[in-house]
Image 1: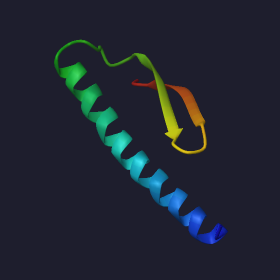
Image 2: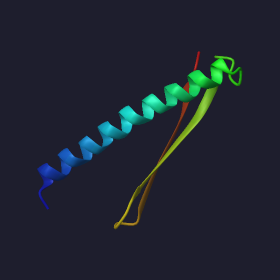
Image 3: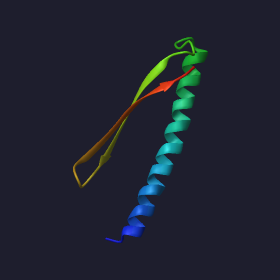
Amino acid sequence: MNEEIFNLEVRKFLKKFGVTAQREIERAVTTALREGRLGGSERLHARAVLTLDGVSADIRVEDEIALG
């Protein structure tokens, strides 16, 4: 395995995931605020699960996202 190529590929994937996830989170929260399902001061529990096929790995990340 080429460590440098592997590292670059992982970083590329994480950048793509991060940008996409941020956009979708912002879109979902904006819609929920507009529709009155959120008031704007909540703390939202967030959970992401990343699965790597071929190596039997499930990586879980959980945190809170404060709206106000």
